[in-house]
Image (cartoon, rainbow, N blue to C red):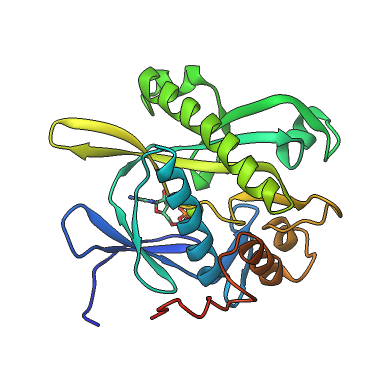
Length: 252
Ligand code: ADP
Ligand code: MG
């Protein structure tokens, strides 16, 4: 393999320059962080699982007409994506109370919300990703009103689609985080879904037992983190068992 230029190393992934202009290679590491990177660990096999789960979800979303950055999976840990200008927001969709909404508003974890709620957080590690309103987003020019409308509409469609996909696998989609970017095509700009959708960015609970199958296992020291991710992959029909690709997978 030839040397590639590393463009960015984040907490869970590395971005390399892609083979064509306007493309990137997204490499999924085994590193896990929580509480604004105060807690760190390496979870063997997590990157492989997230690469596969995110591929599966992005392909499904592409099929229902959501524009995404995903082009193709390259190997066990890497996928080829379109380079975008990341909108500096985390878009969170919640169906059931958990995490910060429970804490901030005093809603018991597990309580069904009256309707799906979309929240925006300013992507700024130094500030701990504070929650912001549309007023802040437009006043500080982080995104235009059109982009906010696009993100909101896509977030809700993604929620409907993913809730169905996970529900069919016996999993409740409690909440999830999305990142969007600007994709420039000539003099056109499109808002597209970027980053990843995986058990690192979703809260997923087993429908029968309410057992957590996501990064909260790491945050709350519940153990068997990668095992839970592997179970998600298995139920989605992606991988047979922990870290094992189906036999017909060329792997690489
Ligand atoms: P972080 O520690 O900032 O969360 P990650 O480890 O998740 O970083 O690495 C992914 C980084 O790449 C994120 O900052 C994300 O916003 C960015 N990113 C994701 N998809 C794209 C893309 N298609 N083009 C450009 N940047 C992207
Ligand atoms: Mg990230």
